[in-house]
Length: 178
Image 1 (cartoon, one colour):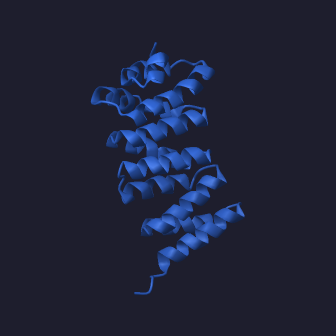
Image 2 (cartoon, rainbow, N blue to C red):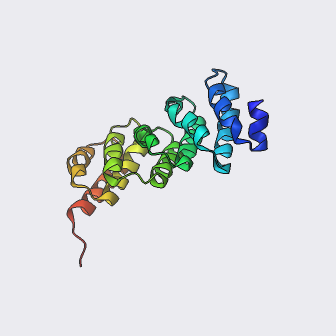
Image 3 (tube, rainbow, N blue to C red):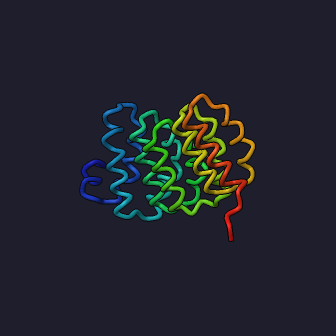
């Protein structure tokens, strides 16, 4: 029933879909996540919004496609309670998830100080792509708290991570000409 309502674009399906997403059957979860995103994009009311924001453990899902869909949905909701859980995914091993999280945080208006904290944590990711992207973002944010962690990246085993750390450090210590 929830799936049929979702396909019709009926936002009353949001709550039942979220409850159904707790199902451990992976095919069901992969099908329902995009449906949930579609419903949110069509506009949800405050009642449906609370279902989603209260169930933020959905971001802990093992399927990257699902984490991406949930991150995109949370970004569209405009509820700042999603910022902290999303920040933890800046170091996700999947590039598409990280991109969705970044866009979601930007659309939620996450403060640059919050973003810095998230990216500092992402520097510790086991994924070299996540570390590289975090270093690049920290260079753009130009927060001095990033200097020491970026210096630590100069010894990273990945050449691209080391190179991005150098670029980020240059942007942090070089003052642009006025």
